[in-house]
Length: 68
Image (cartoon, rainbow, N blue to C red; front, side):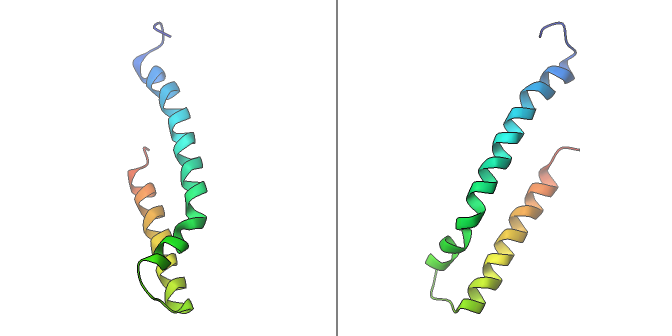
């Protein structure tokens, strides 16, 4: 790999890391509403709204920090 330009070596290292991170986020999302429920006593409607906000914020942060 030493004959490759630096940007290509970085790309080959970052691709698997990005994939593993995406899989980890995908595995974590379904349990987020259970975690939000543990933070307080909420009605079903409030829990739905809070879970939606948490999902949205997480996706927004991923979008803003993704490399272009």
